[in-house]
Image (cartoon, rainbow over all chains, first blue to last red; front, top):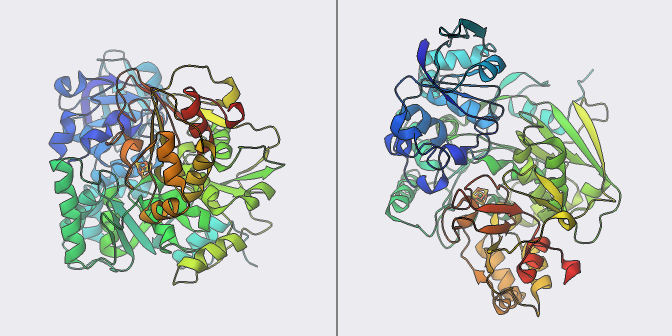
Length: 164
Length: 421
Ligand code: SF4
């Protein structure tokens, strides 16, 4: 599970109201949601994000409301993986549940800047930027979460394993 | 020898059918009540349908509440509401709240006696942590998690470590639960309790009314916490006995339970608090807030839309007028609260002061409808979040406070305290 794309850089405490403002939550179609992803703070995002692009952010990404529409919108917009220093609890769960890959890394947030081409490997946790010849390792994903990702999300996991 | 545990650990252990659990463990638990609202339920229902099971795990342990965009604000939200309604009918969901008997989810469920001490409640809404006021474990998750619970009645959780907060001293006039929780969030920061439990204790916490405890537990998530909890005392028992059919199980932290940290907070010098834009941890005492003209005041939400909140507001607004140019929007959290407020004459007082009374709904709290801010407008609100664009235009500003401060501010036309009236 290796992803490659250009960096969209964000700061600390990006809340779910910023990711998808509540006025757009009267629908749950993911493509509709994607059109309004970051509508208020980065109106250029939805129109310019390319499949595979990578979000790199600071601490507490996805704080606030429990709306799963937030990771859904990011995923449907084409983002392949979100790398942040840390994630808010509910967003962290939601991302795994819906199959949006996420990684925690301080170095990525320190070193990568807007528009750089970087790659991330979900299983090994390796994050690299060829241009800068830099390579880091993200915090390992807990075993249980990895199984959910490998199954392709919580629904599939439950269907296969019948454990919950 | 039994392992010493906190109240949260005991509730989790009992629902995992284990003797003991400790922080960091991943456990699977049985859920007593699962809830979702008009924003999160349609997604949860889609997940439930993908799972291809015929029946929900228990039609009496699910609550579906229409609250965010009701009365339906547009065609799209009406369609989402219909998905919920049809699902509720098809599965004969017992606790389904539609217009007329619906209110804000976290106000309605305790009021109807659907949560009792010792319960494990999971909701597709971040403020599900509100029920900790009753000595229950309750946490917010996303729609997929709730979709799976609808089918299985089970979910997985990581056992959180606990930060114990001990409030001691004497509360000043006009200082209450909202001020204490804002102060605490300011102290801890918005991710200071991330993935953890906040246990509210101490002499002061024990004296707070149930409504104030709901306010505090409600905002635990604003410090990043998984849940906030009070040990259930006689006051909680009386509240529950009046409303619930079930008895509940009363758990208490052992005296030798292990806390990640204990924070002692002396309340003697705490003034009424205001959270400045754009973060709930950006708090300062009301006396230090700059004077600028307000455009809107909102009193309501799952944080402060209960009867006591309206009483405080009525007391302050009695015989006074809302300042010219300020829109005061008051939203009772449930039909029962609305009724009580009418019987007690509060609604008349508020109307005479110049307030507009909304139907029970989340409405402006999340910038949904019924009170959206224009560019550059400033509002003070008794809600729980003041993120950029939360109540409308991304260039509007939201200040958070108690109903007392919000009501006084409506009269003053700027942020201030009742002592200035
Ligand atoms: S009142 Fe506000 S915070 Fe509470 S459930 Fe509704 S939108 Fe969420």
